[in-house]
Every structure is written in C-alpha cells, then in structure tokens.
Image 1 (cartoon, helix red, strand yellow):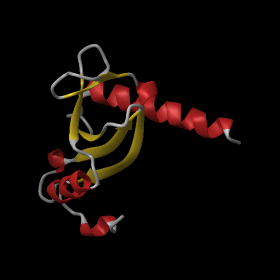
Image 2 (cartoon, one colour):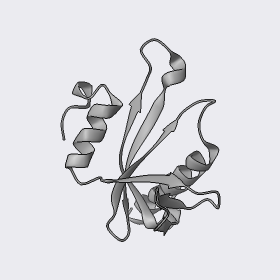
Image 3 (cartoon, rainbow, N blue to C red):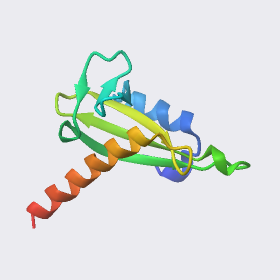
Length: 112
C-alpha cells in the first residue's frame, strides 16, 4: 500500500481502492444490514470484514470530517462505505460498523 500521507483526498483514496478491486459502494439499510447501492445483496455484521479505513478532515471546516472504510464480504464482494464522524454521522452506519469491529476483536481474542 502507498503511504497514507500521500493520499490526502477522498477522491485519490477511492480511485486507488477501485484499482485494487473495491468496486462496490455499500450503504446500511433501514433494517440495519449492509447492502449494495442497488440493494441486490444484503450482509449482517458477521458477514463483513473491515480491511482498512481512512480519515479525512476538512482543511477549512471541521464539519467536513469523514471516514472511508474498505470492506470485504464473506462472498468476496469488495467495496467501500463512508460516513461523517461527530454530530453528522449516520447512526445506522456507525452501529453496523461498530458491530463489525467488535466481532473482529472477539476473533482476535480467540487466537490468543
């Protein structure tokens, strides 16, 4: 992977991830499952792995803060989901990704 310092903009990171096969854009549905934008495939937190994440801060406006996650599903779909952080965050996305993170932490503990 390239040095994250060189990747200052969301567009640059998205372009690189697309080249690496992260072609799907994900969202979290009202029922709390992650899905593709076309809503063809749905996933529970147990079916998703966070591969990487990138934080972006607005240079002139702190309200421009966001985070981009690179995700992989259990059936091999690779894509991204983004969210604001702070007061503008989407609660459904936050809740889903927190569940994914917590599941990953539990898997790490089983290995020890």
